[in-house]
Amino acid sequence: MASGSDHGLKRIVWKKIKDTIITDCRNSEVWKILILDPFTTKLLSSCCKMSDLMSEKITIVEDLFKSREPVPEMKAIYFISPTAKCVDAFIADFKTKPKYKAAYVYFTDYCPDELFNNMKLYCAKYIRVCKEINMSFMPQEAQVFTCDNPGAFQSIYSPNSQDKMNTLETMADQLVSLCATLDEYPGVRYKKDANMENAKTLAELVDDKLAKHYELDDSGKKKGKTQAQLLIVERGFDPVSPILHELTYQAMAYDLIDIQEDTYKYKAEDGPEKEAQLSEDDQLWIKLRHKHIAEVAEQIPKLVKEIAASKKKPDGKITIANLSQMMKKMPAFRKQMTEKKAHLHLAEDCMKHYSNDVEKLCKAEQDLAVGSDVEGVKVKDAMRTLLPVLLHPYNPPDKIRAVLLYIFSLSGTTTENLNKLIQHVKIEDQQEFILNWKALGVPIITSPSFFSRKPTRRDRSQEDTYKLSRWTPVIKDVMEDAVENKLDTKEWPHLSESPAAWNGSGAVSARQKHKASSQDERRTGSRLIVFVVGGMSYSEMRCAYEVTQTVKSCEVIIGSSHILTPTGLLNDIKALSKAPSKAPMETLTIEERSNA
Image (cartoon, rainbow, N blue to C red; front, side, top):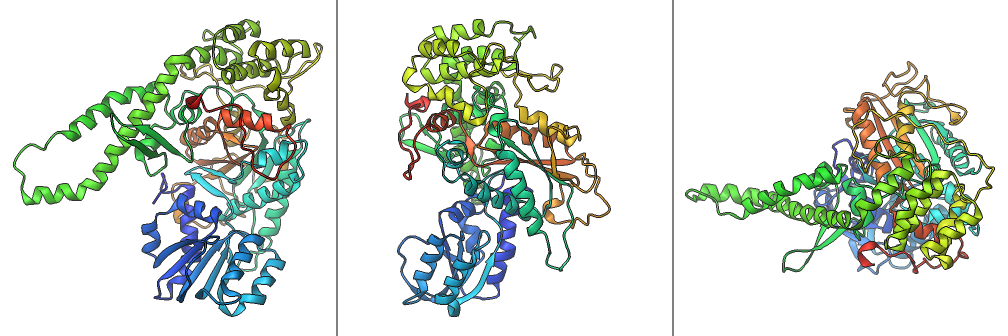
């Protein structure tokens, strides 16, 4: 199994797929073909391996949109999205000459009547099963999910967007499918914002769709609310966290190293280029990903020793029995050694960047973000903190990030001051990197008399932190306040409440009959689901695990349209002022640091 936790989202998704799709097909002894679209391919890859499918009598996995050889003696399982493109491709398989003996069709979500009627018209006699299984979200990690839609950022925030409401509708459907998969009917709340309405709109859509979804359950009874909360926030709610240089291993690696599709490429000594998958299949990655780079660096000598020891020949007499034992352990041992070597290279790559520029940048960034220095002395003149960064020959993206942190720290600056900063960084022709933040409701230009009340932060002065990692993402305050039932109802209005005063302690109301299942064994308490409109950062993902670890009685799950890196976010911000185009945007101005 690919899940890092036996009770993680990936395991729950795989269990649901087995309980619906696989169970329906198990009655037949015939081996089957599984046909997937791009989304369901990614979904299945995230939660199971080919060997898991083989053990369920699925012998071939095919792409719906590629030309396939007909196998008329075999039955085919179609696990597809309910779109016109997918349904047309399905119909084409049976309309003239059927490719397969029969079809078992499973949609990730509700299939519109028009598409369903088309299928019936052309393929009714071949369809054995047709079900909607409510699974249109992507499980990324044990406690992290996405809508697998990076394009949502442009759709929601671009002033030229034509499909904002459609995007929010689809997101609402995906959130309902997450709740259905978790068997939760949560109370829904959103962060009130005078400038932005997206969180409110999405919250209303989700609440409405949840009510419809749970109107009647399988036994014909209305499902009551469960002991869960769903909080929805906008990206502009905390612009600092996705821009700061983070020093925890996962966030740092994805910021500084060019990691595509969770694949890290590295060169072994005098050898060919190698690839390592950063996933929850890798136990060392799970152990290290949320640790500070200083702690990861301490592990490096230990990894070097273990790798060196693995190359030594075994002592003592080699017997047939010994050899047999060694052979049995070899695949797992080899896998562990490969993972250790990959993390040795990745940690060293991160440390190189850290000692080159990042360490110096971090001091200024932390002072601007936190509003005080290491000693706790308040930053009175933010420009004095920013100036050394502007005068040093850092690359433009790093300077842009520092300028943004300066502006965020003041809740906006004057036009005159902003023009000077833009000239300093030499981005006169690319000032959209800074100006377009206003589309997220983040104040960039303010008049000298403007006074903005900054949100009160939790006191963390007694917490043990590294000097260059003093900033805590705002979302962590929200998670902790929600679990302790301290969220202000004026700032976080309820669209619908949980059955009792919710405190995350696991006190379940008398009305609620929460059936225990294997996924609930660890979780005797409640669930908090946090959704960020417009992308979440790796540091915010880490907070979900940290709060769960501290509270124990409440599992925190975080999700968004997609996962952000600082580089990706800045390019998205710049692109907001482009005219809408149907083709995906290829021209990106800020390059990944490793390519610069």
